Image (cartoon, rainbow, N blue to C red; front, side, top):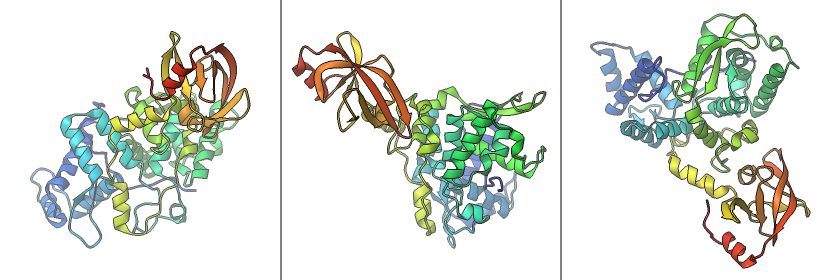
Length: 397
């Protein structure tokens, strides 16, 4: 199976924290600004062909446009000369103008997560592998980076970059885990680059640049290879300051995970299928749609998770039947991961279907997107009316 190939120039990012990549990131942002400033595509090509210090031909302008379309920032419909900046593109511009690095990262990430590996509507797929793909390329990349806590370059080249479906994606993550624990040999999968820089290597490296918003969300460092002793290899790792943003975005807006819960759930198993749009305009409306602001997304997460209150001098979680859990038996409850992942063993909870006593979490077990929790009885509740009031709107912590 071939390795991924996508249209990609350096991601436009005037706020990248990487000093080694700022020049290219800002140059790409200047390109994006030229599309914003000139809404006539023909005139834009003429501008770049006659640029006094950096003249570029029409083919280069077309390639830049294609990359910005991939990133969800703008589009030019077939047969039209109108450059349309997407709603998401306008949000990115606003975040850059405000110097808001976290909002910029949030908007840019959510836009690229929508890009389907099969490519944009109206374009002939590169091969049957792409045509039959149901994978959201950058969604999988970030899910894999989070689930595996980073990627070695050879893991990307040999295993990860050959996934074209969600089934392939789950197998790829499992293969990397088996390689790391020694139950599989990475040499079972050939290096498509032949061990040299060139077309395949450079294309995948550029894909990582795009996926990281130009080394903002994650970046690489040459380290001693885990798989090939005596050799240096790029290690791609999420930047700590943006881990919460990635986890929130990749966990999915329909069922978001509270901060820190992504490590308890296989994000690759939560990936949605790429939508299939046959019409070009519908496709661009999808990839460039407005992104919910970061603050609103974080508030939704807090609302979805089991709330915590102070009760009896300690923090206690309130679990509402039907919302946070379903009762299995006297000792066990089950509920969605986004509600129950905040629980830890030996933490006290109160369950709405039994206000006679509190319970302690003895054990919890994740299976897919469901968490099964084993409870043991703890101290009795003296004031049932007070506790009932906590469920109906008592102050949280």
